[in-house]
Image (cartoon, rainbow, N blue to C red; front, top):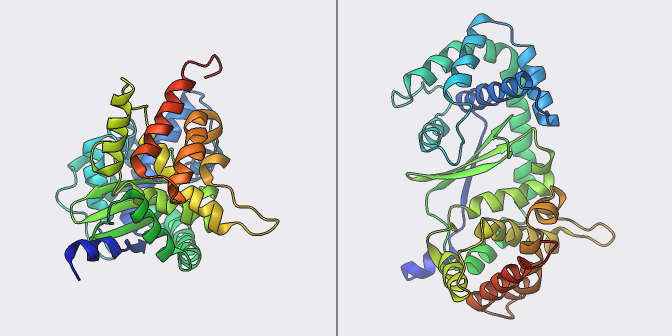
Length: 323
């Protein structure tokens, strides 16, 4: 089989795990953020409240020292947009059972993880690991009937093959403020999903998983979709709309999920509508996708004119008083 054909039929190789150091890293990060929010009298989400309850139960001096290190050095950074934290996160994502913390992890982070490990293993890790294993079992069960269909259809729609390296899916108690995220690392793709987020469980987890996996092959700079967005925007003398590409890789697997998961009398609604992204943040994008990208997904129009039509509708909406 020619190489191009092999690439076109490749499916993402998902590997699911719930690991001690990676969970500890995220717990320290999230608790440090929540404690900052509490100190500033900011609103706490239900997930924040759960993390805060966990934090109040951790009374050891070494734990408090570890959280303080994360508060000072890492809590203001982002798992997607802060390069240093992304690199450290990707490094920790490769740690397996029995492995030690790699020397490439910064000294302060290694110190915090070392300080916090005993109390974490004694108090929170049994609960977090049990939730992680249950989450993984549930996600794998819901994914199994749909994996091939999503993988094949999305690669065709994006006109881009899946990456050959493993897609490591780390289940953690607390992912980030957004719940899940994805980063492409050297030799693998790091997907992080939060067991505390109700929108990442059951069939919704499959919806979210394929959105996150889509990040590995669709981005704002390269590939057929990026080029079509750039050309379409230039055609109208505009810059590409903010996060238009990102909304598109939410809508695409979400729309497939709606078509495939819905049953008579029990419709499935994509996560991004339920969370309000397409009703409050990007309603103009959603309307354009429904009008022009969905016909592309149905094979009734090609990619470039579909994206150009979406962009035209979005740009036109910017002139409306209610935009």
